[in-house]
Image (cartoon, rainbow, N blue to C red; front, side, top):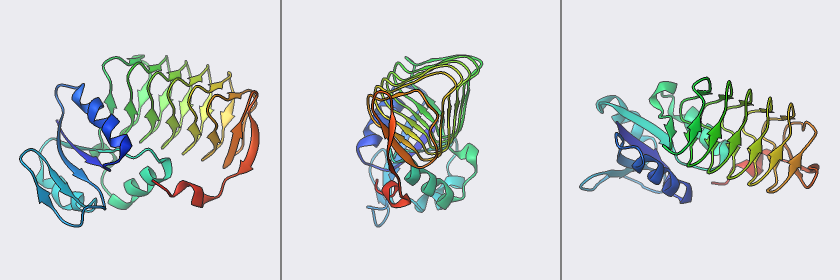
Length: 217
C-alpha cells in the first residue's frame, strides 16, 4: 500500500517509523503547506496539501495519513480535503495489542506497545500513543489523542478532540468532554465538561479553553 503523509513536523517522524514497521506500506510523498509547489525526488514527492486532491484518484492503492499531533488541525485538514473517509489509512504497530472485538476508525494510528481491549471503539483520526492502555468498553471519539503511557480503565468515554496527557489515569465510567485537555500525570475521578483543562491528583478544572488554543500545529 502506498501512503501519502500530510505534515512534515515532529509527529510525522513517528508516523514514518510506524509505516516502516509495516512491510506492506511505502511512503510516496509528503504534503505540507510549507511547500509552495510540487518537487519530485527519486522515491517520493513534496507538495502542498491541496495537491492531494489532484493526484489521489490517479494513484492506485493510495492511502493518506494526517501526521499532525494537534487534534483540531487534523480535523480542519480532513474537512478541507473533501476526500472519502476510506481514503485514509488506519495504521497499527505490530507490537500493539488490539482485541479482535475492538473497532478502530479510519485515519487512526496505534503506536508501539499500546493496548486496546475488548469492545472498545476508537473514532476516526485519533492517536493512541506509545504504551497507552485502552481498557474494555471504552468509547474514544474522533480526533482524540491518548498520550504515551496513559491508562483509560473500563467504560470510559472520551469525546471528540479531547487530549489525555502522558501518564494520566482515568477511572471507570468517567466521561471527558469534547476538546478538553487532561494534564500530564493527572488522575481523573470525576466526569469533565467540554473545553476545559484539568490537572492534578485528582484532576480539577484549571481553565476554560478557547478555540484559538487549538489552532497551532
